[in-house]
Length: 149
Image (tube, rainbow, N blue to C red; front, side, top):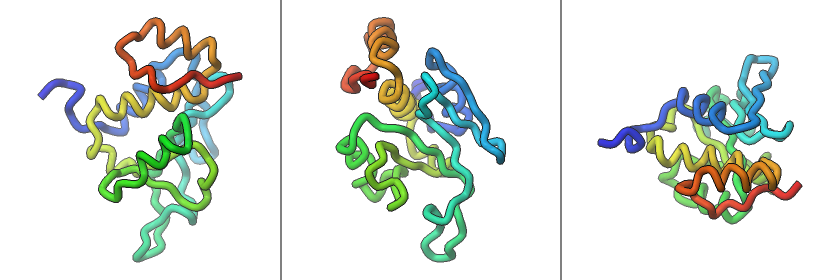
């Protein structure tokens, strides 16, 4: 098994997000990490909220991670497959992001998680930063146009 084919881990989310250029990390009141580029969040670890919980018990999920996506169609592509670890809630209707529970990250390979984090960063980075990063990383998936701001 190649290294990028191994199951993804929570530590990988932190490493990948911090590894993108111009990233700052803010911390919420609960110490949850919020990764930003140009003061715009692209990955954040969410505190337990009533909209994301176990349907049988109502217990709030304590391990939700939010990833920005380039478009609503990208969001739909990630959440439409019920077997996928990605999901959304009505709270995120109209928001270009998907959620995943940390306990399900292992259903993704490191390569898949890398693409999700890179796409999240590209969706929030300025056009100039996004284009520069894509020039420096020609093997990266160029399907995500840099954010226009």
